Length: 286
Image (cartoon, rainbow, N blue to C red; front, side):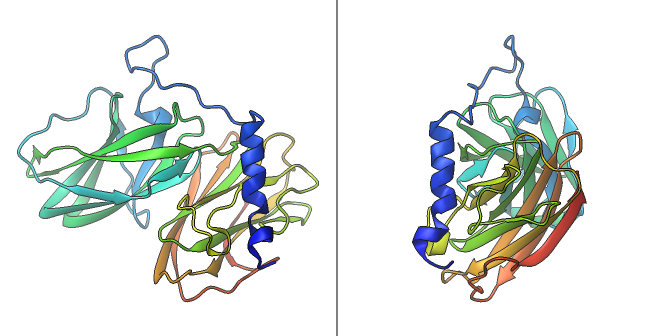
């Protein structure tokens, strides 16, 4: 199916699910309040682009700002609960450590680099129950032990359904990337079949047929009774929509298991793909 009407069906289904109250987001709390909230409620893992280095989570207050290098941040304005976010950190001065936190909450991640850089890509794995409808990602860097000012990147949370099995993708650029998941019984969930017989559903379909909404996230989930067996995840570059390159992160969340992320890039014009199309990202058992 290549028409906008067909491609938009999953996205409208997501709107109806949200309106019906399938998804709820609690209000954010203060880190010192009765319901303690800290960076882990928003960000569960930090790694460098390519996944070579993972950040170490620390408790307590973030490092004090000083006279270290200043940075600028670039990344998507929208994220989904249980998904990932890509952040680019740039400085005119080389740095060897980055600190990532959420403004107003305790705890942070420290990323130590093997050599100084001026440009750093970070992938943040996000919590499945993010408090609130928006938050601010703060990043500072350090050189020779001197920490600079924290730069702020504001993001809005687009509610997604987080079930027993949740597979999502986020990508850069105003292009149309399609998520496909084949469940153990062989039925494939994608924009042309957004609800399976087992209850798996594509509840978020972004930029359908280049109708750009700038959400740049898609999500497939099984809320209950997720079938047991082998799942196959594919990703299709449906249409570049004039974009030269789209960098993606696929996130797999399973009840009782640590999240997994898979990174890559698309170039070219896209293939207008449908059932069975796309590149193999991973397979997993539940």
